[in-house]
Image (cartoon, rainbow over all chains, first blue to last red; front, side, top):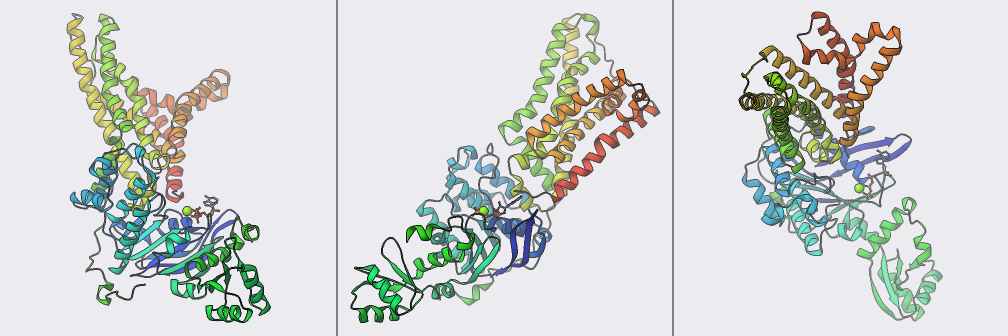
Length: 303
Length: 267
Ligand SMILES: Nc1ncnc2c1ncn2[C@@H]1O[C@H](COP(=O)(O)OP(=O)(O)OP(=O)(O)O)[C@@H](O)[C@H]1O
Ligand SMILES: [Mg+2]
């Protein structure tokens, strides 16, 4: 379990992490979601003691990271897969981790195959690794100590679709066995298929958190009709605010049943009507972080 | 979340708290890291290569009268005195310049222990390479005197050798100091050359043109305090000069650098 309590980090006058509080529970995958520069990496670096906090605390398994006698055996960490000596081979990098943690020799080969790096690839220098191979090596370094907690900063970055599926299964498995997983991403689609719980951060502040279902439940309805404009007006007449995206999908907070009634009453034939789950979460993500978004005006531009 | 989660698996398995990481393990990995890249390997190999080249040059170019062990050890000493501080610098700065510190300091949060292991490994390599140089110089001296047809002269005594080792250890400590202070490979190497060539030049100018400086020079000029180690056995006062200048130019900046290493953000 990871407990973050009133964590704040300021750089000079700039507050990168602002009074952040959340817990990542054992047995669950917690997604840490936020746009670029939201403070995800900073929060994660503070968790593992690489950056000192200005105030507040972060504990893992009830202790500060620095108090763990052999952290690699309890917490697997991947912060930046490209932060490796380009002149070492993948196998060598993993061997250093194995020796530091005091693991048996066989752990290296075992973990390499677990992340699907072949022997030939493992003996290449990291300079010649593709982005996805680096990511796999980074995940291998996190996994090799058979930890109880995983802290992964954008682990899916650079992985191909099969790699993303593989990682999803791996993290699911890890959590189902009682492990704690915290992973960050700025890509909603990536995280919504893996995470049980979500913590959404923007401008250093938490803007929403809860289980995925809770956050999805608040996501409303998506409907389509031959003339989206007519549907939009019909809803507006009933005092229901809706937004119409470029592809003609009408989204609203109202229940699907209500939208169906409105359409029927107005004599509009719907071509699609469903809870806005995935898509709705995206809307929520954009909305919740709108204030902190760089592209705060895209919504207006798209409409 | 899937509804099929077995509640019994809430705890993965009986976990025992792992023991702490012993210092020997840190020494092992830090030493390994100094050799396991091409750059690192050739830096180490360059000590042996430089010693062989310097011996060969002495053999070929030194006059008969200079076919002595002292000539060989002096010739070998020059390149080594430059290479060893580089080894000390790079062992520290690599963690920042190559960003490996992100992994290193997460696996071992106690940065002080990692840095101590690096220092011990550097010094160990330094002293070991001095003995390698001693042996290569001995072979060179034997070959050289035989080829040049003069008596083999062994005019380096253990005290002298010990002083030269000490001088090189100081050189490595300077490299280490610059490493923790600058934490960037290129910057620290430039710093080293400024430190060892620019500062003595400035002191030289002051000594020549400023009378007041002549009195205090022995107490502020670290470089000149060190040169006695290569030349002769220092007197008590010269040891005092070395101690005072070392405090100013080595110990204080090292402490500042260590403090920065402990607090700096690793990213
Ligand atoms: N040393 C520093 N000095 C000043 N500002 C900093 C420093 N380190 C980070 N920041 C700022 O803190 C903010 C949060 O950065 P962080 O890397 O945590 O974002 P992130 O959520 O990980 O973003 P991304 O999705 O792009 O990785 C950014 O605005 C960044 O510029
Ligand atoms: Mg980041």
